[in-house]
Figure 1 (cartoon, rainbow, N blue to C red):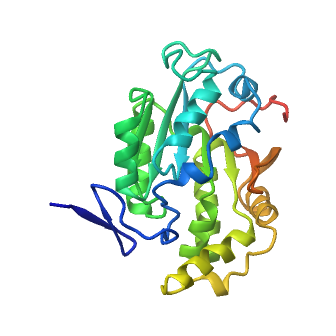
Figure 2: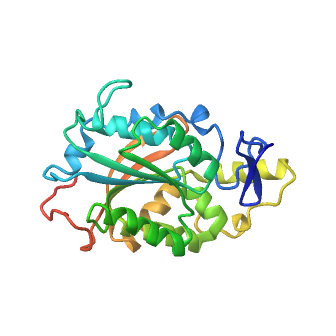
Length: 275
């Protein structure tokens, strides 16, 4: 007997996804890494990035990955940042000389179950089903995780091709609120915004399937060059500074690194220089 759960009005079978191609209203595609493989991002990130960003941190580093899907990119990021080769090394002996614990969340419980079952680093990478836009659940959940390490914020957060789905489902106000919350939770933020053409493509896919358009698509005032618009929000409204653009993927998405200028992040070093 098949068992199904419902996410944003779309049913998923626990024996396998049943949604039609393109009908993932929150970007929760069941085979996302097949058409946007992790290597497309990792090749842009320099080796030794954690050493550059956190040269004097002796304690373990904490990372938050928002919208992790089924975890392939999360695991690949973990390996890349710690200098671990496929099938070699261990989280206890990272080649990069840093310890990293990742909390990875996604709105889709079926994708999270897949990630949990296939994770090669269950002691260092935690996967959890979480609606990051639900403040009543996200704040106690994240606080509980951080308290295990005696911390109140993460060292680095990852937001890879998530902003469009937040924007389409929660509007301009939701996007700004999401970026404000995310920036308040970390010292560094690595973000990959989808360009505006992806918004049009997502809306077009829904129409072809005979579904209603995204509620906010036609009323979005934040539009155009989304990498630039998100940079403006983060730098002007969220007390962050743009550290580096690592370039663009083959699917035309910029990989941007921001640093918090706030005073509420423990462990910040005022003398750190922009990379």
